[in-house]
Length: 167
Image (cartoon, rainbow, N blue to C red; front, side, top):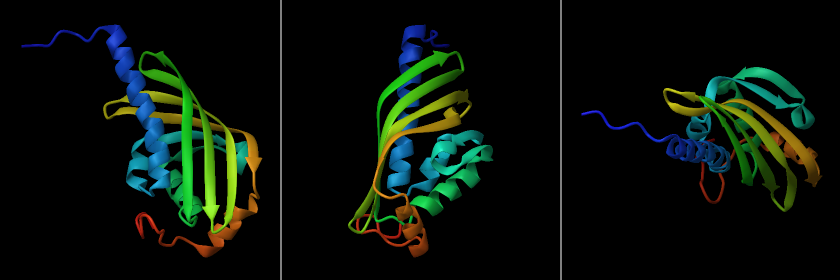
């Protein structure tokens, strides 16, 4: 027996929830060093535009992107990525999501904070929604960007809350 088709309004709600989950998995994945979860949110190749922050504007294999983010964030004592006010536009099997963000990067008593928004293109795949393009727009910062260099010099190490997970 075949089930009746899902009404379009219900499908839209399910799609919006799935896309929101991608964004929450982004923050949780990097903050808990759950790199497998973080990788799972991306298509195999992703157009990244982090030019304002890191000088990156290119299509990158998702596996390489995860390794780059891991090398950048794993050395910090803690990170916190917060996403709010998701504005999702559905277009069949693709969607655009604009999300406000704040990020805190803690190393000892020093912190670097930033805020802004992501603009992302999501695509529906056989495995669910995936991020296919990601642009980061930074609108404000506090602290010194040199903290990233200090953290990198220390290399990945244990954290008090999750130990060696994701190192």
